[in-house]
Length: 79
Picture 1 (cartoon, rainbow, N blue to C red):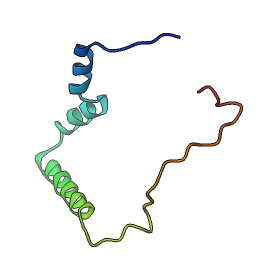
Picture 2 (picture 1 turned 60 degrees about the vertical axis):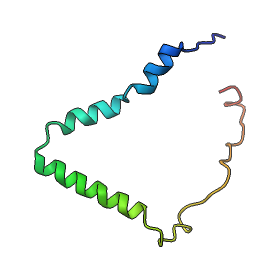
Picture 3 (picture 1 turned 30 degrees about the vertical axis):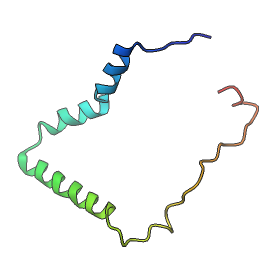
């Protein structure tokens, strides 16, 4: 077994580094026309507004409670 840990500099670098997906998205969006960027922004603002609605009962689709571990099988005991 090998134990690998980050130095404080490594932790700080990882904390501040954008994800590769974020970089890919930013690069792709930089090539979109302004009108498309505005449409995307308006759509995302609408989604955020919908998510913040207090009067929507999400109980039928959301469950709370502990996350259950899958039952152990002989093939995943040491994963």
